[in-house]
Length: 128
Image (cartoon, rainbow, N blue to C red; front, side):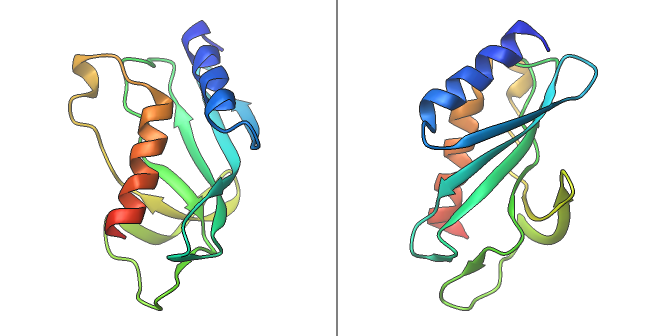
């Protein structure tokens, strides 16, 4: 695992101190990572889930995309999700909802995995 990827995992440990982080080496210097639990608001049932993603070896000069949350998450109001949140996916063998929020400027500057996770969680709260 590259030093930058390892540092990103440590940043996530600080951002989510109560969570368990499970990392699987991708064999190229990056990792597949699951952070669990992550709190959601009461707009979702359940209101805690996991978030998963791949941190590529090119990090921090690569986007963290796509991201996934537990496939059992539903909107509390009964409405279905609409793109860019789509059902029917899997991450690390677990049913998942895929959240497609690409940073088109990722190649132009350093990315922060914590910022990306928080942006996606904020997107869910505001838009999903």
